[in-house]
Image 1 (cartoon, rainbow, N blue to C red):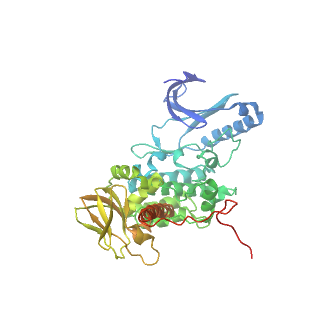
Image 2 (cartoon, helix red, strand yellow):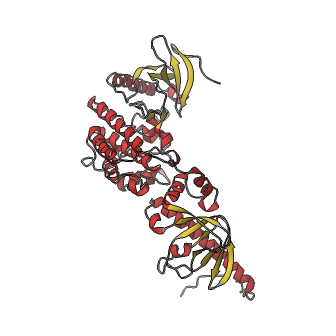
Image 3 (tube, helix red, strand yellow):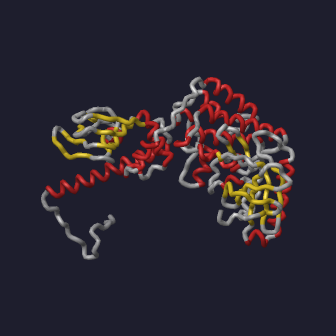
Length: 453
């Protein structure tokens, strides 16, 4: 591998197994250790190297990490063997675990079966419960710090070691390192309050929410809005976003994400007990992965350009894939049926009062007027299939169960479509009408002026 160092200290480097913004993880070996180990290398930037104060702080933290590691011996926690600070770098020697991070399974297309997701979170609960009984709070629980293999063996990593040397902060590293977002942080962590084990349980609740729904409980366009939501807003119900979940799961997630510390789970064992109750109620462990081909079809349509991937997966979840033969009536003028469609294949005729006003092809929206009409809810067009058609049907009742973000972007895009069609219709009418009156411009070149009494 290009750029792979031969040795770091006493360790011979075998391979690179991971890389982040501030650290690289290598597979390494040394005569001192019977098995290969993972070596996490942190290089200091020029500014950090010049500041002895920061180096002293880092040394103190790494020594603390070694002390913490000596007290943790649990099958679901990565073991730390050593931590070394040198003038230009620091490295941590830890147990090598050939798994991947949970980040892989936090997207809708790679979601795990429910029983597997529950099993993974259960093991994390027990590991955090054990750590707290040793007097240790992780403070940085997120998918990137949870490793899992194909057999669902779980290892929590980076206990107190998630540092960003360029920020010179030893606290709340999820905010620093989590792509500029406090997405997994508890409200009390954001506020800078003293932390206990309940902050880890909240963060684990966010991870569970992400695993079960393919999205975060709180989403926003910027960090300030996100922080506001975490502190003040209630998360959507997981069963609302994923109807395949048992109803009891809503209660478990809600309690894990309680903003009130007294209402949140008091320890990991209590959290794990409720997860066991949910797992017991899951009778059918069969799982069918989502059809990614349908996602790909929608992703190519101009109408869905402004939808994030997570929002597009949610649209698929709350909509229906329909087919109809030629001459089938898809929408009827005067109907109060508010369903609307996105044409995927074929062509349709659009008419008003028996008069043909045009044809739509793939990518066009039809039936949206009844949905947008907040008073009459009446279809103003008749839509008939000219050929065999395939279309995505969206029922407002199902859309109402989607997240606020999906409902907002859907209404915004539909409004844009209607506005563009109205503009096109106006241009058509203008071409058929009499010449417009030009009006006279004022001498100042301004057509309209305010007149004061």
